[in-house]
Image (cartoon, rainbow, N blue to C red; front, side):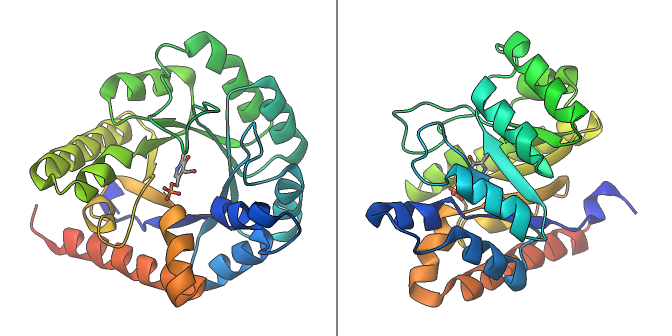
Length: 257
Ligand code: PXP
């Protein structure tokens, strides 16, 4: 079996169920219930970002997710001592290190792994030694992939935000070029032994060309699915995303190289 025939996993990010809950305080809607539903609808894993300002997911959510769900949990976290301590206390299946700025609305841009080598190295080591699968959320840039290899992480996640923004702006020529950049970064990462994931901003419209990239093993998708759940329900939204991903990957595999 070649790398390109690999099944494409879907990680569902449930942060924005917590955003809606926190708009009123209290307990509803419950992100852990959303995680159970996502698993039943075909998610292969659950992703949650515990931000330093706790604007959506809370410490208690992370504790409950590690206790209650039976799919792998991917904890997105900033490279800080506080987040490292929390990750080590709960030991999620995977930890994805992301850049974090308080003033940003969402994770803008990837981690500069090359420039932050010294700061990242002990955090990566501590998480790896504890048995968590560490990934770095980076731009699709060979320099960043090479820094990830140097840091000894097994996984990287490529930021698809720019590709999705170009879709919204109708800049399809530039979007195709950005998709090419993601594809060649994925191929570079796989050739260097990394497992390559991708995510951020993906929708029903934008997921196909990304899912078709044979070297990608996993996509992480949240905001669009939670929004779509308002109209069709979470289960239907996830099932449709899953089908679009599977169809795009199957089509790409059937095409002559
Ligand atoms: N991957 C990473 C590393 C992220 O930080 C996020 C957003 O939290 C996502 C994927 C999912 O992005 P979106 O919610 O836009 O689908």
